[in-house]
Each structure stands twice: as C-alpha cells, then as structure tokens.
Image 1 (cartoon, rainbow, N blue to C red):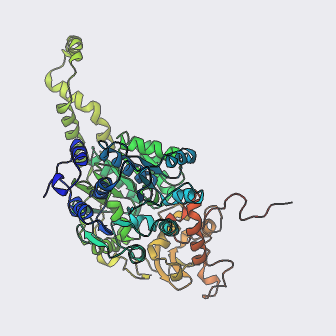
Image 2: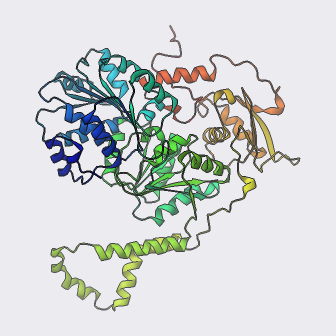
Image 3: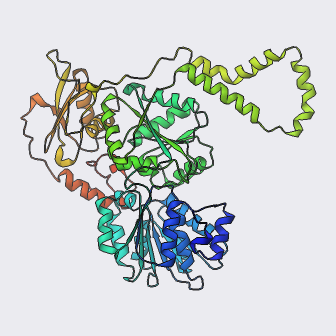
Length: 594
C-alpha cells in the first residue's frame, strides 16, 4: 500500500493528513486519488459509508483548486445537513496549510442571510444540500461559471430521499465542461440514470463487492416474541456496558416511545426524528458525538448522512422493508477500518427478511442468543472490576486517605470488596434475579415466505379466532405483507395484535386478524388522527370483494404529490410508508370562511 506522498498529492496536503494522524491511505483513497490527480475525469466510486470517501475526493479537489481565484471551482452535493457540515469540516482540516482556501456550507435550517454573505465572499468550494442550494440559485446568489468539479456524495441516499428533481436542476446550472464525481454505496436505477445523462465515460472504482456490506461489520440477529422486543433491547444493552449505538425504529412515534422508555429505565439515550426542530436535532447530535449519550434512537430519514465515529453497534429494533436501507444502517458502524456489529431483533414472522438481506449483502447472519440474567450480571460485574482496575488515581486523594482508613478499619479485606461490589451491582442482581429466557426456537413452518401472499400458521378457523378484513391498499400501492403489518401496528399503536393470512390483490388486500381485536382496529382506522394515511379498513363479510371506485387522487398520485412537496415542508411522514399523505401547509387544503 503506497503512502500519501506517493499518491502525488501536493506537499501541503501530505503535511495536513499526517498532522491529522493518517498513516496509510484506505483502499478507496489509494484507488481514487491517483486517478483524479494524474488523469482528471468523470469517476464513479462504489464504496460503503465509513471507508474514507471524503478524503478520496476532497484531497484531489484541493490539489487542483486555485486558492488565488475567488470563484466557486468545486461543488459538492450531499443528502443531509449533518453530512454537509462533516464534509466541510474535513475539507478545512485538509486545507489547513493552504492559505486562501474558503469552504462554504449551504444547508437548510440555518440562517440564509449568513449563507448569502458567505457566497458573496467567493468560496472556492461549496458543500450543500440540494434544497437550500436550489433556493440560492433561484435568488441568483450563486455563480457556477468557473465550476470545474462536481461531486455527488451518498448519491443513492440523496435520490432515495426525493431530491431527484433538485439534483437535476442544479446539474443543469453547472458548466458542460467539468469533471463529475459520483460516490455511492449502492447503484439503484436512479443513480445509473445520472451516469448516462450527466457523465462522460466515467471511470468506475469499486471497493469491495457491489451492493454489499463492509467486511468490518458482523451481522447478527436475535429471535424473540414481538412483545419481548424492548426487553431484549435492554438485555443487549446491559450485556454490552460500553455500548455506543444507533437504534433504528420504523416510525417517529415508536422512536420517541423507545427513547423515553430507555431514559426512564436509567439509560443515557435520546431520540432523533423528523418531528424535532433543527435546534433540538443539533443538541441531540452534539450530545451523542460527545458521548454524553450511549444510545441514539432514530428513524432512517433522521439518521441518513450521520457521520459518527467509533460506533460499536447498530441495532435494528425493526428491520427495514428495503435491503438497501439495511446496507446504509449497518454502514454506520465498522468505519475507518474499525470493526462493528449490526444487530437485528426479529420475531418469527420476520425471519424471511434476514434471508432477503443475506442475498443482497452476500453475507450470512449469525444467530445469537439473548443473554440470560446470570450472563448479564457476570458481564456487568467484570466491567465494574475493570473500571476499578483502570481508574486514574488523583494525587489529591492522598490527603483524604487517613480519614478513609480510620472509617473502614473495622472491616477486613473481603468485607470491603463485597460492599464495594454491592454498591454498584445490587440493582442488576435485583432486576435479573428471576429473569426469564427471551429466546424463541426457530420453526421453519412458521417463517413467512417472500411473496405477495403471507402464509403463516395463523389462519382463520371454525372457532372464529380470526376475522378477515378488507384493506384499501394493494399491489399497485407497492405494499408487501410486512408493510401492512406495520401499518396496523402503527395505527392501533399496538404490536400485540395477532395477524394471520395476508392476501394482496392489485387494488386492495385481505388480512386475517384476531377476532377480539377487530373492533379496536376498525375504530383506529376510522379516526382521522390515528389514521392520517386515509387507508380504509372494513370487515370483508360486509362488502363486495370488488372495491368501490376511489375518490380523489389515487395513492400513486398522492405519493407523487408528496415527493414534490416533501422538500419544502417540515413534514416527513412518508419516510415509513409509500401511501402516507403530506400534512397541509398554511392556507392549503381547506377554503377559508368569508
């Protein structure tokens, strides 16, 4: 492996990376940097998050930038505010020994007047999120006439978040003669379209297998009853006393509930989701980066683009429906050649998802056992002893020792040790004294097959255990059985309702549910507040199997409308289900009384 000096970088850049403690270039850097320095051109870099992509494109950009020209020469687009700030800070660190380099961060949620002032000073590099940069273009505050480098970082996430139109608009305002660099963990169709439309014979650098997870991450799953999911999460956290993790949930409501429960149970945790203000998000992220929090509970949209070093675990409290989302989640750990663990807590009906993801990432999941109460207590005890052995002794404590010796002289050595251990350890012994086994044994017959029809052991029977319901979404709404289950869980705010067979038709679906829960389900779906998605649910026996014509826009049309609205609204309800409707903005939707 060559060193940074052998890659052809300018001496000031080599000095900067050495001052930052970089010893050897990472694989993506060793591949990309020489290519961009020796033969500048369009380039595609396929590599997982955390593999050093920022330095891979940032160092060559700074190598080619003219610091004496106060014009924007490089434009970097990324999906989130957090990633925008991270890239900007990294570039400033790389350019610390190059006088005159200015990097401007343009993103939503911050003072637009201050950002306009920064642009007026003529930064050589702009790092931006698509929405705010388009706003600056409409205000005529940008000058891209001298742009020679365009970078799309985390392109798959950016397009997945609905920024396709914004990215297209920005690219059309840049000069034809430029070098376009695209970095992505996966290569969906939308990213490939950018390749064919905006790039000229790009060089492709693939680090690791395409669309696969990083080799530094160990993938594990725990099989539990759905009702024991939170208890399993607590036990995993207690078994890993030095845990530093992001916990992914499906919905904002569940994210906040899990975070509140962890805080109430004494854990250093907090929530990150779309309902938080930008100031609240910044506060939570600062606490998490500073290790004041051990666990961050987040939705996928809120956590996209987060760049946090040294995560020990990523925990999937709920598995995503899309395997590529799992790739992004697991890529938050095992970064910069460090190892990490991606844990999934699943029930029997979700076992098929593990097999889907294994095929996608070309890696096998290890099945693990939820630790017993005895195992947790043992791990906590050893951690307590390790902390005592490694604690730094302050010289000032010497003056207090004579008093301490006199206070404890009536106890012998063994008594002191017992009391010392009990002081910190009694609460774990008490909590786990009669802890039950949370593990569930696998039965192949109970796995849900990967197809449009779910065949679980819960079928309607002659005793009326299950009742068939009509649900007004179907195959054309791009739903699968797990999404319908998730919808019922969210609207009823319960994960304990038994669900059996699911038949998905083109325009609607039939779902077998526990007969005792039918009234609760119908009431929840009939309430606009608990069912803002507008999904209609009725007893199948009370209606014809062919649904009545839908009123208003179809779900597809609503989804398309939402994609165009989401970028201008703080509402991000669509991060969980494709049929969710955007919230009304001021003055829209309802007419005013005169």
